[in-house]
Image (cartoon, rainbow, N blue to C red):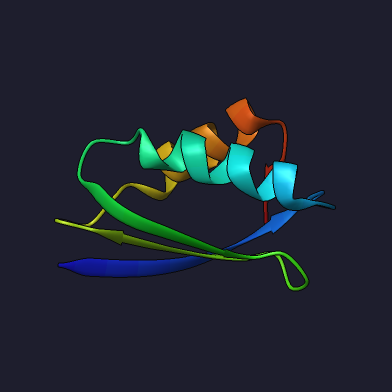
Length: 67
């Protein structure tokens, strides 16, 4: 199992959190996504290491930016 942390900018509400969580959850191998709205911290737990580019693309698809 692998865990990686990222920072996402632009999230302002629970709808934002849900959008980011949904998009990242669609990446193959992702087991869990935890988003902390006040800090923008996103923790992704997966079966194997996930490419940061895949996470960046998912965050972008949700309408936000990965720092």
